[in-house]
Structures are given as C-alpha cells and as structure tokens.
Image (cartoon, rainbow, N blue to C red):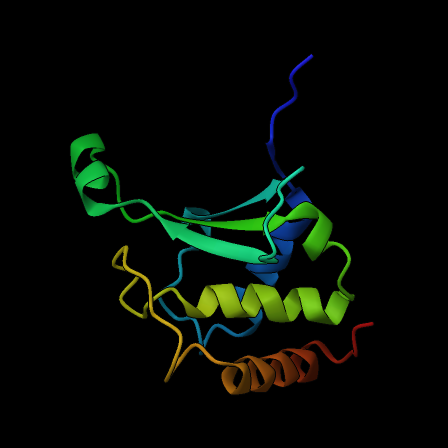
Length: 132
C-alpha cells in the first residue's frame, strides 16, 4: 500500500507559532496561519529543512495571498537536538521577508548563522528555559 510521503506535524506547527509569537518584534509581519509545516518521510535529501513559497503566478491564478511551506526532512530533522531544531526553524523563518510578500530572502546579510544564534538566545531568554 502506498503511503503519503508528506504529513503535517501539529507539534512543529505549534513550535513555529510559538517562535513567531515569542519573537514577534523580529517577525512582525509573519502571518503564522499562512506558514505551513510539513514533514517529508523517506526523503533522501542531505538537507534538514527547506522553505517554499507559492509562486506569484499561481497565487494570482488561484486568488490566494502569500503562503509559505516549511518542509522538514524527517530522518535528518528529528535526529537533531531540540535546540538545533529550533535553530533550523528560525533559519527557515528568516527567509520570509518583512513584507510577507511571497518572496524569499537569500542567505547572506539577514539569513546567516550569526542571526540564527542571536535569535535563538533571545528566544531562550524570553522563554526562561534552556532547550536540550
């Protein structure tokens, strides 16, 4: 029997919402209801996670507003510690531009390890707990 390669993970969706709400001043325009998290099982990618946006031509044709999908690679992502999972999700969220326009920011000035570490430490400080 064929099983679906993708599935939703409510725990990850709630974690993304928590990150965005906790760091609201860093993600002021992120509409968490338009950021979906899916898990890819049986993927052979070396990536841990990726973010996609729905192309503008499809949004126009379907009459949709910007939508983002964070795909986490099951075997790679869940092998990480809880703290590294948060860092990966922070990294993917940083790709979403402040305008929430449907585009993606490239790696570089804003999407980089230094920014991820800074936001991670701010997240932990605001949550009042260290992750494992």
